[in-house]
Amino acid sequence: MTITQLPELSDARIGVDGRIATLMLNRDDVRNELTGTKLVDDIVRTAEWLNSDETVCVLILTGAGKAFSTGGNVKHMRDRAGSFGGDVYEVQKKYREGIQRMALAMHRLEVPSIAAINGPAVGAGFDLACMCDIRLAASEAVMGESFVNLGIVPGDGGAWFLQRLVGYQCAAELTFTGRMLTAADAKAAGS
Image (cartoon, rainbow, N blue to C red; front, side, top):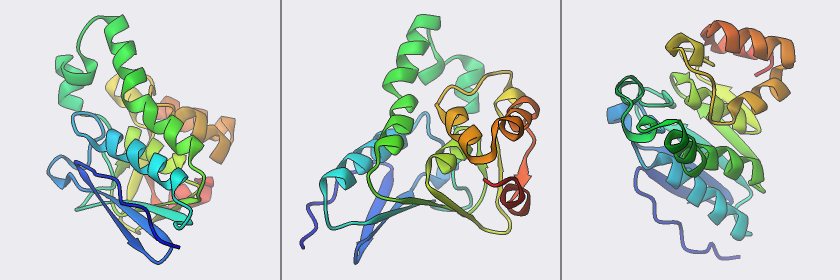
């Protein structure tokens, strides 16, 4: 079998070794944030490519540099800029046409996915890890459903994935407190 042409990506890199594809979020300069970059587009494009290519049988998703992904751009949230700018209807539309496409693409992904969590996975970055079928975390990795710490609610679809991993009660506790987990804590929680 021959691999079809790799997708063209802007802020991520993809490599294939045998039947394993590795997607590396490649925006270490902003700790692989998902808003304010083209990473969501790259993830969606990669998922669509994988669903059309019969040679790859697994996806490994990881981050370049020190972070897996720190989620959304907090400065944009604070300043109501970028994905977070405009009235409530504009922001709603930006979410649907932006980061929520990532959750839908990962849910439709037809091959198993593994999150190789090399560093912080925070907010939407943690949700992205939860969208994968398996999560493997480095011992120094920290992760959390930290939206409440910013006074916002999870809006990328990750809360739906989290409760399926750890159960409703644990997911509610993590969401309501914004508590950060070590790799050992996450393993104990079942995430």
